[in-house]
Image (cartoon, rainbow, N blue to C red; front, side):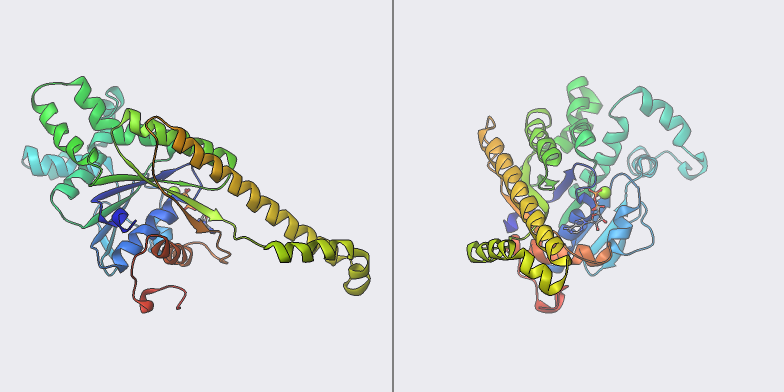
Length: 329
Ligand SMILES: Nc1ncnc2c1ncn2[C@@H]1O[C@H](COP(=O)(O)OP(=O)(O)O)[C@@H](O)[C@H]1O
Ligand SMILES: [Mg+2]
């Protein structure tokens, strides 16, 4: 499983709110801690990645936020500028002023243009070997297929000439399972699991990109083993006595424990369903489902990311020096 970190480009996607940004930041952190020069890139420029990394803000120019860990936020306008500067050599490009208006006009008329610029920028960083690994905090399940699929759509539309050449090198990177992978983050709940399952099948059939792993985030720990379950049952039977002894709160505490355990079991069933749907896919999606526990951290952001990174380092079997661990084990 360390092989996940040996990719050149890893897309991290999933239903909104499941923990995509935190997980992408955590994977990047694990890679950086393992000594890999790593870039993590937020695609939707909403600022969540900056929050997760504990920095004020990110923009198109990567900054080093921790040793080996670089972060940026995608901008199609900046990607276009860079492209023109590097490849078209339009002089005085700086003086053209905001390209956004004209560009939006073109991009809205031609679907895939915005996507090809941002995907092109990432592929360019891969081709230039500027980093060992690039982790993308990508679009959510609804949009990721058109994002990763943009070079294929454009290549299919324009079979010859310059455009074909300009997209083929990207496809060579994106469709190579040794170089590019997709990590789908889900929570152990009905809708995220259903969306993840559908997405994993669409990715393979529509884009040529390779699913690498499912990350089940916010998985609750097993609360009771069989003996402890028997204790819970006994406590239940003795509830009147307990209430007598410690007050009416005893019932609520017992109820909370039962409720959490029921949620954990339902979650496990959803993940079980995901496993069987992946196995039943044609061809079967033989990818691992790794888990990240629900963290009971008081605040979001960097701390959560570092704890997720600790968990992932174990799951991915990555050696991290003990002074690099967030929980200080
Ligand atoms: N394993 C976890 N345990 C507890 N909180 C988490 C966990 N994963 C993510 N979170 C929290 O959930 C919220 C949403 O996470 P985020 O990564 O921004 O989701 P997304 O990018 O999918 O919208 C954040 O406040 C984050 O700190
Ligand atoms: Mg996010």
